[in-house]
Image (cartoon, rainbow, N blue to C red):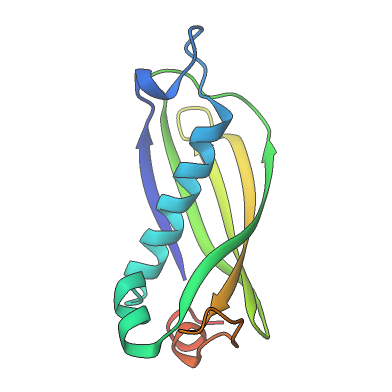
Amino acid sequence: MKVEVPILVHAFETDFGGVVSNTRFLEWFERGRYALLHEAGLPVEETWSTEGVMAIVRRVEVDYLLFARHEDRLVLTTQAGQWKGASATVEHEIVRPKDGAVIARATQTIAFLNRAWKPTRVPKSYREKLGT
C-alpha cells in the first residue's frame, strides 16, 4: 500500500534564507505514516483500544538530497516496507513535481508495544491491511 501527501512549504517551515529546516522533514514523514495507517484502516487510537498495540517510531534514517524552499509544492510518498517479528519499516520519498527532483528519502523503523509497554509481534491486522 502506498499513499501520497501533498505539501506546500510555508514560511514558518524555513530559515531566513527561505530554505526548509531539516526538522520539518521529520514532521512530514510522520504525516505520511499517519496517512498510511488511516488509509489502511489502522488509526493509532483505534488500534490501541481494540488490539492493545501501539506502533511507535524507534529510528529514522534520512537522506537529505536537495533543499526545498518557501512555497515549493512537494509530494510525499509513503509505503509499508519490511516486516519482521516486533518491528517494521516505513519508506518515504519527497519529490518536487515541477522538476521531478527527489528532495529526500527516509526509512522509519517502527516498533510495536503492548499495553504493558513491552515489545510485541507485528499484529496480523497490520500485515493484512498494509499488504505485507
